Image (cartoon, rainbow, N blue to C red):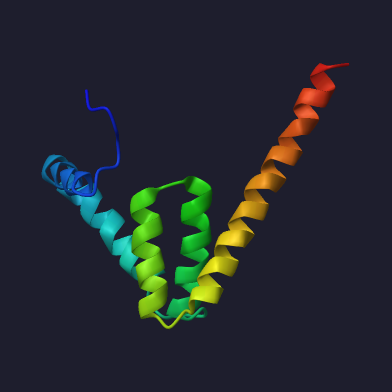
Length: 107
């Protein structure tokens, strides 16, 4: 086993998933394309949401891809940073909510 995960080139191994289950991978890629297409929300807004979500889910490939996507869609560095701070607050909020479980366990 490798000493680290998430090498820059490791994402290329997802191609094996396509080879094993092409119909499912195609459905995933099609849905992704539809979700990020212009709609009620513009592409920049969708990418900023994705930047925040990628930080909450802690996916390094998504972080890199959606930060680049947000920049390409016209987001400023300040907007990207603000989206990341939203995710930081949301992550902290989840920890605070779950602290109630710990406090109940103390009773």
